[in-house]
Every structure is written in structure tokens, then in C-alpha cells.
Amino acid sequence: MIRLALRQFRTSTWTAVLGLVAVAAVALATRPHFADAAAAAQRACGSDPHCPALTAFVLDNTTPRTVFGLVVTVAPALIGAFWGAPLVAREFEAGTYRLVWTQSISRSRWLAVKLAVVGTATVVATALLSALVTWWATPLDRAAAAVYGTFDQRDLVPIGYALFAFAFGVTAGLVTRRTLPAMVLTLAGLLTVRIMVAEWIRPLLVAPRVVSMPLDPATTGYGSGGNILFGVGPSALEPTTPDIPNAWIQSVRVVDAAGLPLTDQVLRATCPGLGEGPQGPAGPASEAARQRMHDCVRRIGENYHEVVTYQPGDRYWTFQWWELALFVLLTVLLCGYAYYRLRRFRG
Image (cartoon, rainbow, N blue to C red; front, side, top):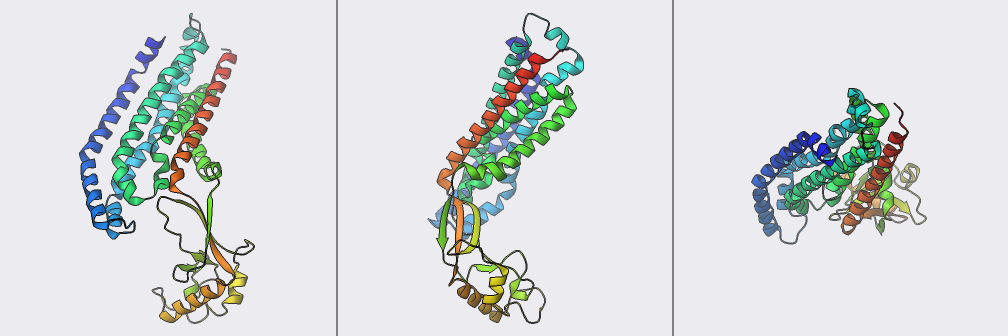
């Protein structure tokens, strides 16, 4: 049975091998240039993380970094759609399940072997791809100092995504018994779960750090509700997001001693007439307007302060392992349901 499963999977195997070879060829051809450029920028900047040379290096190489990240992002979806969804669904469509499941090999063993063979290939292919891209992007990632910005494109979590997508595809194929609908469901399911985890679950995995600091008139401006400098508003004050290397900034708020947020009503009462006056064309604010803004921030700062909630960069691997474990758990649950569904199937 294992030999049969390997023979049936050989086309997909060679496709994956060719894809990995292509990515490896591009990575090996371009990484020396990135490494040399990063080293030159680092020598020019020394220990200054905000050096213009490092910023220019990152901006100049944004496109290849995005392309390689996209490859890792798309790979789990392709595995789920083209490896997982047809695994059982095509047996139903072709009617071959009647022959396969009436032989000496039970349907449970048949599914176990299929899952083991293709699941192992999924882990190996995704792990190699993720390791290759992570290695290639190391100079860029260090210069960018934003490890959470490419969190789902590096190291361990792409393996979890691929396993989940594969298991979801198999389960969708069992439920729909049609390959194309199963592929569509797999893509939609993977996208939905990844968004849910990133937006709702990941922020809850580890308690964030919270730091308070006084409002800085030089870095505090109007919020998203308008432009208080030009009289387009009103809007609450909004501090500039602090630059903490490799940190995941979850929120930046202006609150009082009791933790209550600054409201537009308080802003109007504390800074009357700040947004009044003629509105000229859009452009840099006048020095007088800037001074009024600075004075307003100073008055607000007597009773309010800035609170930053963030995850530090040294928790990166904690989040990597947690998220991998979460998607592996979902994979196990889906495989268990697939076994249950297959054993109860009558046809």
C-alpha cells in the first residue's frame, strides 16, 4: 500500500522538487549580493538602528523580499488545494473507491497510509521552503528589525499552515466528494482560519508588555478623524507609533490616570479654538499652527499620558511554537474527523 501511495504521488513529488530547485537557484544567485549590501550598510551605520543607509537598503530590496514571502504564503494553500482536496474526492468522482475499499486493505488503513505519505511530503517540502526563504531573507530581516512583519513567512509556522491546509482539503473532499468544490473550500477555510488566528487568537497567546510615557509634543498629532492643524476635525490626539526594534506594537493610546481615553470633548475644552480659522490649501502647517498644537499637547499632557502595548522581539519564538502547536492540533482534529467520516461512509 505504501508503494502504491508513493507511485500515485510521484507527479506531485516531482512538481514540488522542481519548485524547490527553482526557489533555491534564485536564492543562491541573489543572496550573496544582499549579504554584501547588508554588511556594507551595517559598517556605515555602526550600532545606529535608524541609520538612513539601513533604511535605504531595506527599501531598495522590498520587491524581492515581498515575492519570496508570497511564495511561502501561497505554498500551504497550493498544498491544501492540490494535494489534500483530491486525495479522497477523486476516488469518489472516479468511482474507484468501490474497488479500493473492498480489497484486503481496510479503508482506515488506506486513509492512514495516504495521510502519512502525503503528510510527510507536506512537512518536508514546506520545511525546506521555509528554511530556504528564511536563510535568504536573514540580511533583510535584520536590517528591517521587524520580525513580526514577516512572522507567517518564516521558520516554523508555514509548516503548521501547510499541515492544516492539507488536512482541511482531505476533510473537504470527504464531505463534498467533489474535487473542485473541495479545493475552493480549502482555500476559503485556510484564509479564514489564518485571519482569525492572526487577528483574535495570536494577540491572546502571551500577555503583552505595557509601558507608559509622557506625551511628546514633537511626536503627537491629530488622529484619524480629521486634521486638527487645518481645522478639519475634531479628532483626538494620536501619538506617533514608537520605534521599538523587532517589537509587535499592538496599540498606542492616550489615557488619563484612571485609564480612560482622551475624548474629543476634553480636547475641545482643553484646547479651545485650535481648529478654528481659515482653511488654506493642503500643505505644511504654519509655524503658528504647529506652536498651537504643541501648546495643546502640553496642556493635555498634564492629565493624560501615552500607553504603548507591545510584544517584544524576544518572544518571537514563543509565538512561533504556540502557533505551530495550534495548527498541528487543528490538523489532528481534522484527521480524526476524516477517519470518523470515512468509517461511517456507506456507499
